[in-house]
Image 1 (cartoon, rainbow, N blue to C red):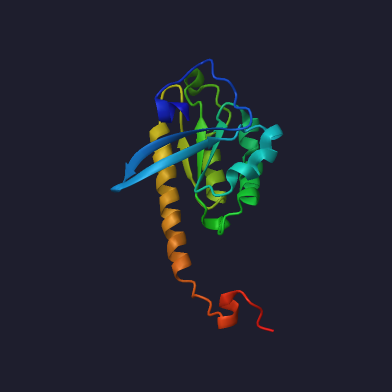
Image 2: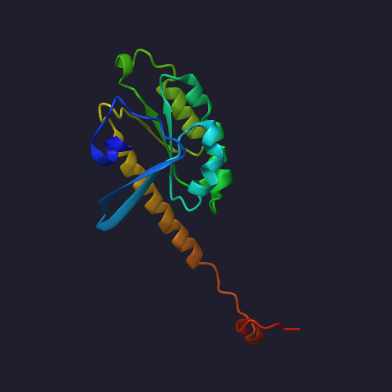
Length: 182
């Protein structure tokens, strides 16, 4: 998040407690977009805070450490928890992006989660986009967040089209005034 917005990486990074957010403005297809990127800690003890932050989200970026198997194994829980708490109108089309981070560590020799395993997980969730990243080396970070922004915009347009096709309900004159029809 800090690398994407501020082009800075710090080895003295302090773990997020609760949540943190940053904004970034960009142009996508002649459209001015302001991204609000929330970091919701990624620790089970803060998972109950999710509903406050997830509602109204336009995209979800899940991040795991390619060098720590447990972080990959917890993806299903985070994925399901997000859908449950955010409760998007269409779970199957809600945009997710998966980032396998820290690919730079030990020249990639300490990795325990293969790219194939991550891509298979993405395929099992409806072919969500996957990026291998290094915040430290600024590898693939911009591409991943640009994909997230474009996915959110595409989903927003699909939702607008969906809502435009819902026929308007015709209310009786009494119901329109807020009175009782009985």
